[in-house]
Length: 465
Image (tube, rainbow, N blue to C red; front, top):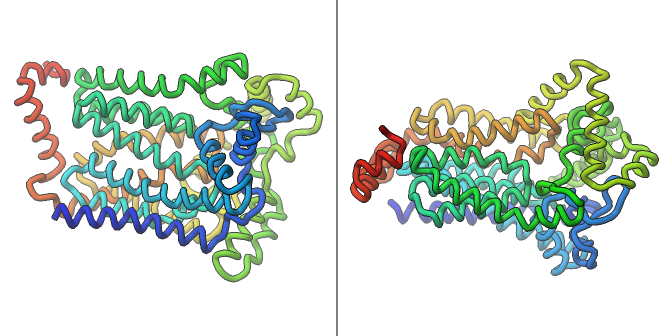
């Protein structure tokens, strides 16, 4: 049985890679011009010897407008294939196809930690992750979402393992994953409380203290070099990215619909006649996306850019934040309406994004949402409790975007977790021989620790009286 399960798991990993490579060869997104945005500009500057820099809000220079890891990955592809050439983008997307396999492996790991002895949970979650259209489509884009999804899932899985084993080396690995996640997308560092909960589930409050300390210290050490660099180039402390105020302004200024996109009639015209075939559909979606542009294009004047260019990058962001707050005060109730709209966009569909108005996107997104809800409803109560850290992660990230700004790409890192929720209903079917159910596996682990350390020491570590 174990050998068959391992073969199925490897089959899902290979399937995920194959589907993503097929998608990028069919869609040919690597031939789409102007598709790399800030990541590509920073990567080009890195290779040109100008350091981690970009033109942002009227000024060119060292930046924290993006977290560092993904632009470095793009720069590596540029080094191999040439700056912003189709060859370089194909290399990058092929790499992201392989990353899709790692994402499935991370989902299988997380499912195994959450539902030990229930192989169907992992297999169903892995299948959904391998084939879910949004996750497949993400591999064909120069965007950080797929890397962020893989690191977010890995961080939670590593935290569960740390709680299960109690090993310091596992705590270090969890801290490394959390640091890498923060350096990829600092918003996703909101997983930290959920990761701590996952450790506590395995060790108890007192037994988890040392492990959590090691995890936190490792994560802090991991992000410190970038923080030191930010302080050196900006003259002040900046946590990974400098753009919170800028993003809040995009999502809440007087012209905003709650996102960073512009609502134009010309976008609809670009979507009217996509042509035949998936490649033509993809080309029309890209054309509509370029037509939509960014809110900056219509909300900032040349005088705004000249004024912003005179101050530091963090100060530019703060000034835009203050402007958004003033405009919100001028229209009482508008912020609440924007937050409710963003929550709807996040859970369902972002109406300002041309790609999310496509029926294929909407059907797959709604399908995964309904499956996740059904899986949570069908899952045994004990398993729902162990799903708690992933639910907390999704809740905190959704809350952040509800209060600030939303986009379809911000939802992608949560979709592997939703696949696990959807698969949780499969826990009612079968279990690995000798493993029993979740409670049995956890009881066996507790008995092993009692035999190893003695009952008084176990009670002390678990916080029991």
